[in-house]
Image (cartoon, rainbow, N blue to C red; front, side, top):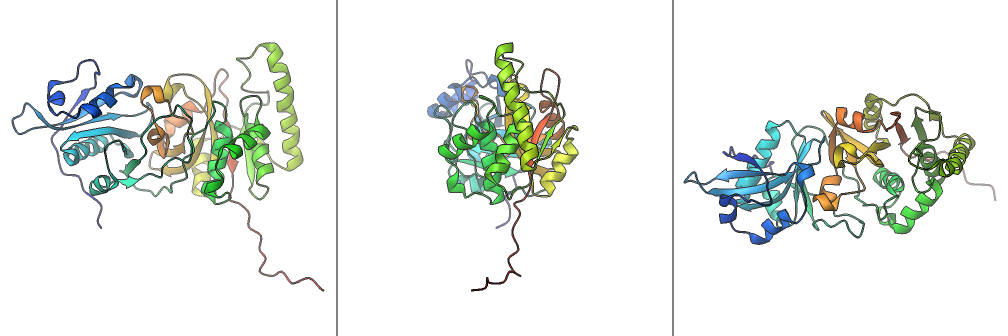
Length: 369
């Protein structure tokens, strides 16, 4: 079946104001959808309405609410109402005009058949999420650029502090080193317990824990400062013992054979690693995408022209952000470069996991009896 080609649809784009819905939108009805649009404060994600005018030039034939995390390369359709195919085609045309890599569609009202008819593929449902994550039970994606990106499982961290462990588990599941059905809360907490600097996972401790958990997977740590990190917000008495643990992690890295590169890992190296089918666990600040400067681990696993595709194990439900946003998320290279320079003294931390080594048993001989 050939891919769907959106029709040329005349449309307009207007900001979404939940307090003052446009009269043509109210005339379309769909009260349940409109209530959902207004249920969260979406203002941080630039909510807009893409509207398709009716034949009379006054009413609308269709409308879609679109949002997106700042500094990313996608649009998300929360819902489309009225003539849904026309609304979706208008959003896709709008995204193409902006040079974006992708359009996603939350499955509140869209069925798989409806999504497929307008060129969208289903996203795999999350394996787990935090209790307060919210979000639809299904979602869909349409890529607008060249380049194939294989879909890893989506696993939402179930605590506020296990992002590092989750990104490592998802990376290994995507690489085939871990069965998808093994991604569960005990696995999440077990790996976090081995990697944590209480409660965060700093790069060296995380890299060592990954190596211990999967001895056949090559691991390299990149950290361009030699002092302990992620401690500045603690009182001095709380920093001291965590710093001791980080120094112990460096000793452990030498013991288990995990190299620590003290140079700055450039974006070109991240793209090269992805091209070799390696996975990059990257420490970023959420200031750009979510508005607060909190260190957070994401998984870099794919690349398209102009953007790196990440998995973010956390979504900000209060802003209308869901797993559909966080899964297969394209981030422009320049944006990812900026958000991975961690304050206050701008360091970059990453863990690169290579393809699992496979033993060659073809020439082995049976043991003498």
